[in-house]
Each structure stands twice: as C-alpha cells, then as structure tokens.
Image (cartoon, protein in one colour):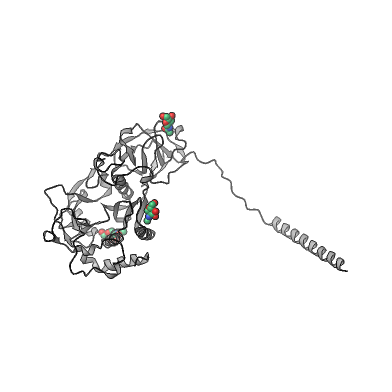
Length: 433
Ligand SMILES: *[C@@H]1O[C@H](CO)[C@@H](O)[C@H](O)[C@H]1NC(C)=O
Ligand SMILES: *[C@@H]1O[C@H](CO)[C@@H](O)[C@H](O)[C@H]1NC(C)=O
Ligand SMILES: *[C@@H]1O[C@H](CO)[C@@H](O)[C@H](O)[C@H]1NC(C)=O
C-alpha cells in the first residue's frame, strides 16, 4: 500500500516534468533566436588607437603630445599640435593623417619650440602640419620616419575645432592646480564673481588639489560652469613648482603652465569671443562697467584691431584686514581659505620696475602665448588703463608696504549682496556650509 502510492506519486512527478520540458521546447521553437549582428567589414586601419589622455608620450621620442587643433590662419599649415618637447632632442618629424579610415602619405612637420622656456629641459611646443590633398582628416599623429607602415600601435590625436562656433562670450583659463591647494573660500568667491561679471566658462587644468576644493570643483563641473581638464603631468615628468630652472630645478616651468595656457586658447578659439588668462586668486575687474562684456564692447569700439588687452596687476595683501569686520561672516568661519571681501588695501604698483600684466585676448588673434604677454599674435596690443580695468589680486604682499602706504579699494563690495548669496549657495550644495 505505502510502496504503491510512492510509485504512483513518482510517476506523476515524472509525467509533470516531461510535460513542462515539452512545453518549454515548443515555446522556444516559436521564439526566434536573437542574432547578434556581425561586423560587415574588418575594422578600418585607422584610427586604431585614439589617445584618451591629455598627455600622450610620442613613441620613439622624449616628447609629449597634448592636443591637435584645426588652424588655417597661416598659408602653410592646417593643423597645430600642442605639445611638450625636450629641447635638446628635437628631431625631424612627419605628420600622418587618418583620412576617412585610411592613412595618408606623410607630410613634413614643422616643430616650433616656444622661445620662453626659462632654462627647463622641456618646453611648450607647437607642431604645424599640412593636410595632404583629398584627405578628410579626422586624426593626426607624428612619426620619426616618413613610413606610415610604422604607425602600427601609434596613438592618434583627434583633430578638434572642426565645426564649433561661438557659444560663449567669455572663458577664463586658470593656471594649473597642483599640490593640496584647498583655498575654498577665495576660489568660490572668484568663480561667483566671474559669473556675475558675465563669464560663461572657467577651464581648469588639474594635477591635484585638496579634498574640499575637489568636492567644490566637482560640483561646479557637474553644473557645467567649470571645465576640469585632467593634467597628470607628474606621471610623466618632474614638473617644477617655480618659474626659473636655475632657481627651482625640475623638467618644465611651473607644472607645464605655458602648455596649458596655449592649449586653453586653442580649446576656446572657436567657441569663445574672449579669453582671460589668469590665476584663480586674480579677478579682472571693470571699474567703469557693470560686466566684462560691456567693458570689451567699449574697448573694441575704441580700438577695433586689438587682439590682446593687458590688464595691470594690483596686489591686495592678505595680512591687512578691513577694520569694521562687517564681512567677517560667521557662516564662513569653518570654510578654509581667504575671504577677499575683507581685504581692501592695495599696493600701488611700482611702475619704475617691471610690473607684470595678465591678458584678455581674442583667441583667434593669438598664435602663441606666454604668461604675461603673447609671443606671436595678429592685430594690436593695448595696455588697458587701471582706472578702466585692473586685477584684484589678494595674496601675500609683494612690496612690504605699511598700511598707511596702501590705497583703499573696495570695488568688490559693489557686488557683495549677490556675491555672498551665491557663494553661500555654492558652499551649501557641497556641504561646506
Ligand atoms: C623607432 O625607432 C626605431 C629605431 O630608430 C626605428 O627602427 C622605428 O622605425 C621607429 N618607429 C617609428 C614609429 O618611428
Ligand atoms: C554675450 O554678450 C551679449 C552682450 O554683448 C549678450 O547679449 C549675450 O546674451 C551674451 N551671451 C552669452 C552666451 O552670455
Ligand atoms: C583633480 O585631480 C586629482 C588627481 O587626479 C583627482 O583626484 C581629483 O578628483 C580631481 N578633481 C577634479 C574636481 O576633477
């Protein structure tokens, strides 16, 4: 009795399993199997390997490539590659293009190391290339021999600036961020001040920064106001934290600042009417206009053929504080960094000695730049009078003057209401308030 029911139960289970098996198979036969389409053609021979880095070692050489831009302002070239080259190892190079998936014949490259290298072994360098006829070039690379076959495993650079157009009035290019720089309050104030002055984009080359600043910049970059460009130069070179080789040593001037400034000009050339080249602790402040665009409209009306506007640097020593303390705001007490609103005493520049400027440029009128002046440009240069526009630069004192030798300048206070509101908003967003 017990054994019989055991067999019957097992038989039922067996029949059920068989039925399920048959049903599943019938369903599967009806359902078409999903086909993964196979590629029709073998992969194109180029570009096989596109560099996704901002610093790409150039094979077989000591040099580094950064980016390639369309540049047809001269007669003899179409492309400008920005790089960092070792000055004592410059050899003939050949441009190789990828034209709609095929190699071009090579064309000779013109290598132009920038004249201002301050004694360092590596310097900012432009390489000019001519695109061969009938080539719709998408990528470019450089070879040490004029033999495209050797381009195997060569990293290609995409050619940029092919069809952008002005979408920005004003771009600010900030010198490289490095070390554990964490001056959050001044950085936020400067970014928000720039926004109030009509800046559309701030480009920052980032080697490294402090933890709070990292969070802040991540947030500005998500929003699109700030464009972070990774700048991992320490992985390739021993960059100098100073500007002069004989004094500071290292492979290249100030973390490669000259290369990034030039890169930023070309990056902005087709999309921004004006570019301001400066540091984040500097604000190019119009003193007779509400914003930078109305300043530039006025200046260009007066001097239409000007490509470079030199802005005088004015230093506001951070060791002198405005006495009332009305901008010593309690909510900022836990935020690391300098509060620019508290520093209203400025040094008068000593115009007897060399006094550096920073620049507002029309990028299409500049070919090569240094930090305080351009090296090669089209059009005129103009020193903007300090009563029209000057730099507010809050930092350590330069001249070591006493407080009664300093001048009061509280132009920043004209913007204080909106500035404080916007700074607070930005800091709250990242949990720093
Ligand atoms: C690299 O250098 C070697 C030796 O000089 C040469 O044979 C080779 O063709 C070069 N490769 C490229 C890609 O230029
Ligand atoms: C650029 O400036 C002009 C004023 O000269 C203004 O009308 C325009 O909205 C600005 N464009 C952007 C993108 O800010
Ligand atoms: C800056 O670079 C450092 C080092 O690569 C990275 O850890 C950090 O997240 C970067 N910050 C931003 C905002 O991109």
